[in-house]
Image (cartoon, rainbow, N blue to C red; front, side, top):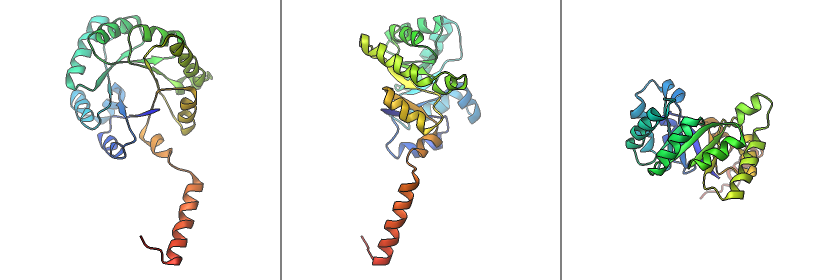
Length: 216
């Protein structure tokens, strides 16, 4: 499974990119607004920090303007993936941009039928929002499983990008359900490495090495 980091904090992205663990980045208008910086400048900087896709979202809701904004975003860097909402106009714009060679991430997916339509429209990625489904007592993992089955049934190439991930358990369950990508906040990604028994074992090894005068 690929890992994308869900942030517009370029310092965080740079640090995580240095680990070799991230394969791309997802952003949205809310994340970029928090940075207080120019939208295009942030996207361009992020695109320079990773070779993978960087999702940049349109703010329009009608077909014509979404296509226009999508072209502007794609012109920023070759690894931009244009993020479009899962609406009829969004799907129409997805088809237009995809046919022109632009990678599209269709976002705000909450049903398998929506995911089916996004794949038919040529989306490179579909973003089911796990955490937001959990918030209304619907199992987000069932959605990932349903999408996986449908895509495999018809050999769709659209990648399932598990989004709205809030915990390490969400990451594990997404991987088990067959998601192609998990996009995670930096704190969740960093937390995946942690386990109390790892810390305890390392402390014991270091203590034994010091006691025995072991040097490398």
